[in-house]
Length: 246
Image 1 (cartoon, rainbow, N blue to C red):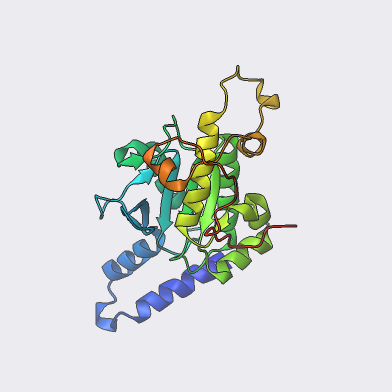
Image 2 (cartoon, one colour):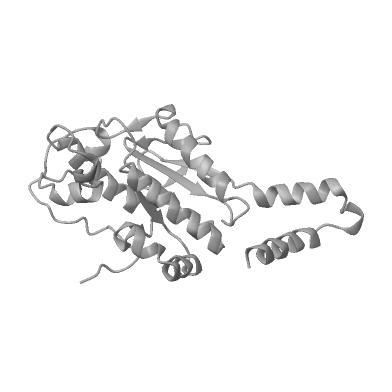
């Protein structure tokens, strides 16, 4: 099925090229475009809730402990390896861009903006599930923003939604960042204790659920101001992509 999809994509691409232009070099370039995944690290533009390519907008800023990557191509067996490499690059280069928020020593959340993704094949879904498990072993939580209905259905049928949890699916990057910022602050406020044996060490999600500290407003988290609010009510602007389980 994956091979058929690649063949169809290549056929559609070549159909847009005149016969006289369909040279070996042209075919090679078309195949290269299909195999290369275009991805971009995102940052928030000051004063608004919009996130853009952080390399194209120098004034955009990221949040400490959070990596946001927009995937700008279909995801399938031919480019999933490239996607994983790009995610690792952004994780390693986390200090390259302007950052705000609570000071933490590493990445705790990776947000995938999937609005441009029009197709995901079964091999890519399994690779993304494997990536989730890899991140989980390193106490990093994946969140997914704005997948279309077809992508969401594919994830759901494959068990990917249950694996990641509906709590980590969002309509907007802004909503995902709000939730992650609250958790980053909770992680920062956790008391330091000797590390337990690996088999007894709680996961990131389990530690967050145990956290009972006060929540902070999003502007305060982004600015680094740690004054707690009196209320713990959930921000009414949050827009989970799927309804929470009762």
